[in-house]
Image 1: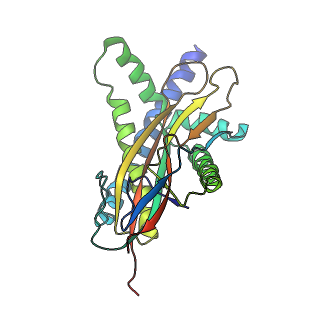
Image 2 (image 1 turned 135 degrees about the horizontal axis):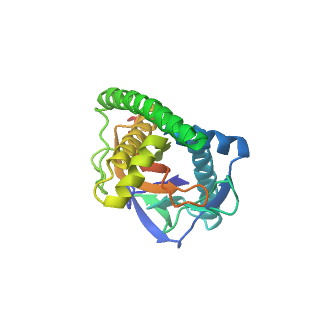
Length: 114
Length: 150
């Protein structure tokens, strides 16, 4: 499945619109990472643990998106958008949970011009 | 008294390490930016159709946080209002770093350019307080990879 955030695929055209698909994920990192992040909050700089966490969750969300797209028989997903929000602040102490999804995505069946 | 000592130590450590980290980060950003200058990343939504291209979604993301000193300065700034320069440089660094990572990924795929680049910002608030602390920047776009003619 081709995934793109453009509206068109060069050299091909959309022949069928199959509706919206999305993939979302909520994920947390273990306490050790949170502690490291707390330290980094004093010294400043990149929080590698969290960058990793977000990267992983994004990839998994993309996989789910892809599965959904395959299930409806699409061969391309166009206009992909990402959005992130942190869920569950406060209450859970140092635990940082993230949520990631791709809303407003159009799966299509495309075919070549020639 | 011990509270004040701890506070001042944190402030000093934050200032020293924070400045150092920021300077080093800016140096590396500028160096890599000039290296990747030949790979254009544009916000245009319509790719050229004159040549056959393969396309792939590329992303680059980074989570950075401010140091203790800057957070303190920002909280002071909140009293008087005005530009919070402490956070401005943070966001600037994060945005440029995210774009660079996206470009690096695109280059690794042999892409010629990246289209429809979008940014996405999320502040990661930890704990109960509404401090911005750290921020996540995601840059994503569609890499166009020239297809070899058979």
